[in-house]
Image (cartoon, rainbow, N blue to C red; front, top):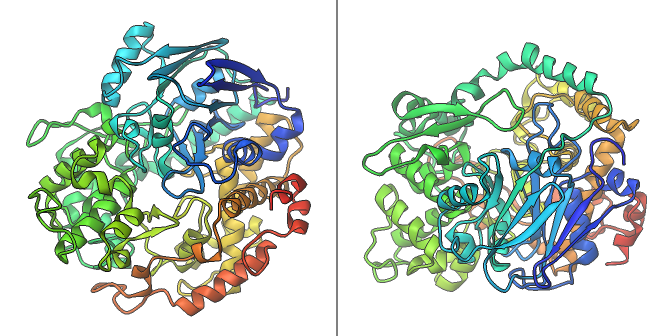
Length: 621
């Protein structure tokens, strides 16, 4: 087997309690690379069309990439995929921490889990030793207690775990899979799939360090990170994400406020990372092999008790649980974030769903009868915490909100659909398309629904001093922020394909590596004579595979659209006189299809799929 991979895929059939291993041929690795590429391959190859995502027929795929588990900075990540119970389409999420590196050390590039266990179980993987163990005594417990009990049972404090809390067990459609207690494979509802299989945890311990082709070169990159880049990343090390000042996101209009409706939040500094650091901040921690250490940790006793084991809110959580719900009580936001990690729920979907419910309550679409007397008003931190508990346990109104905003709005009716901020059924992250219009197009066409990570940040293309870094992708000139013409769409496509490469290599997005350095790191790890061209084609290949999956599941051109909220200005602030123009957006979408080699309905052509060397995918259409 070439360097960077173990050459082994672990397969576990929970229904039959059968454990097998397969060894793909070398071109499988080069063609699909890892992570999202492996997820797309197995979902298309093996999953029957139109199955219920919460049925035993769904696959659950944990996948590493070639970089995972090496010593280069950014190599901590792994991927989880399945058919999404939230969107009924392509589901995939990446996560950092230490679990992915342990998977590679145990000798596996991926785990493909099928079927459903007859009773609650967990998996214990220790190098070649793979066991299906009883988890009845763990069922119903929070993630922290499960981790503590399993480490004691396995008599090893270094065991790494991917696990779910009660939200995953209760099939909350946006339940996530926690990797440890602070890192979440957050989006697309992978925790609900895990719960539907009666799988509580995957505990791993490995002792075999992954081999790389050129260890000397990898050491050089470690030195470059420490000597050249680290000093420029000090803001991450001190404050984590959101450290650019939360109020700056108000100045641009980017920050979601009151369910993406409003533009002013005078007390934003109350939930700024600087406030967190100066009042309740405890320390900063990091992921495997990364010197940046961008993960916040807090701890306090009053008015709620928050345990430092669960970390602290980053930007997406500060926005979703804070400003989007009108909550400026930092301790309430920290407690809400902790509960999401305890119960295993995606903070973005939780915050956007609650923000939606708060606006429904404000407009009288939800009353005290539906909320069981809970005053679900914007800014009510106590109510925020109480409704999170109800969602995780599917109690009262929480049972409805556990379905996500799309299904909840359809059930409520009376115009609630106009207030539901989602794409393809998944709640929108904390970045506003009224400011970043190409990012909005990226939301619309993304196979996983609204996703800001494999996307373009329009603002970066307006900076004369920064545009040079995009030159390797043939993006040479700045593009105005408000532009959504062919030039911007082209940039979106090139950048998206490159970002998907990160999801296959499983490199952290916050690393400062250039395109050349990523290519050289891949060469040093794998020993391949690869190029930027080959890597970008992998990203394009995987994007098309995910697209075909969704088309097979019944998605159409109509699903490549934004929620009504973004076609109107904010009520105040920077974006109070601008919105997404639906006609301009429709034209940009059509340009996107043509540039991608898709037909007028957004379906990849047979010729395009053949050009990408995936003829077998064309047969699925």
